[in-house]
Length: 399
Image (cartoon, rainbow, N blue to C red):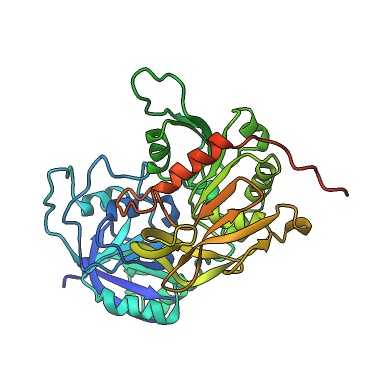
């Protein structure tokens, strides 16, 4: 292929793949992960949780439905890079308003195609996710115009920051508060409930799902304090999905503890689930290659049903899988907790439920704009929790 069209993917362990430049030309580095979804690539690209990650699609043919104005989960593409095997020549959908490649170019997203994504995915499953870089066009040359060697590119990749320990929510959170109003039936003038949502990288569809249930949602930046939350007199508090290592989110955890102390009903998704785990005193850990896709089986232990769910997480909560557990924080201050949902592929904790507090969370995505919608009932569960709970404070511990 012409040198101008050549792209090289370099992994931090030294393995390389050569393919076709796609999207923007240049160089990019990030944590490389794979997504097993066969659809929903526009939602994936615009999900803030993928900030600083290079996404590999395991589905071989990507881009056939183009891009449209209805499906974005945020105002921009967040992925650090994109890897596909066989991009569509042209979109074929009545909803399409543009092509995938044009969107990647407009967003400055360095991408590549025409590589064996199956071999790459198998490598990541065996070795685990790692740092990687995509290089094309001018990024393949050094300052003197000479071709950079694979060893040169590996050094660039190894100098990139690791996802472990990364605090990224502030980089994707809204800078100002905003409100999503409820959808109310004719004749109804008051919302069913009012929620304050902390934007850790929230997806557009989350407040939409609440609005569909008559809930007004005030979305606050990650810098919000408990005073900011209480000023809105919420019936419930929600913590969103988002990127980064939950172990680095100490300020957010303290805010959540202030919410739990006041017994305000709480619901968390993804990063919000990990932060509930840490607020309760459990640890979190990095998964070998994570869960990313729209086809993950999860058991709801309350109902015994198996749900097919959408995931995007590389960290998980370390909590006992069986029986009731007293939350470890502060001598059991928050009472009993159970693991409410479990991933059936690898027994990863996929949900927590407090038995002595009005709080629960799930690791996956019940809003699932691209589907599936098996877990949409969780928003109904949150509404029921808000409309049946009376807020009261837990007495502060004695020093």
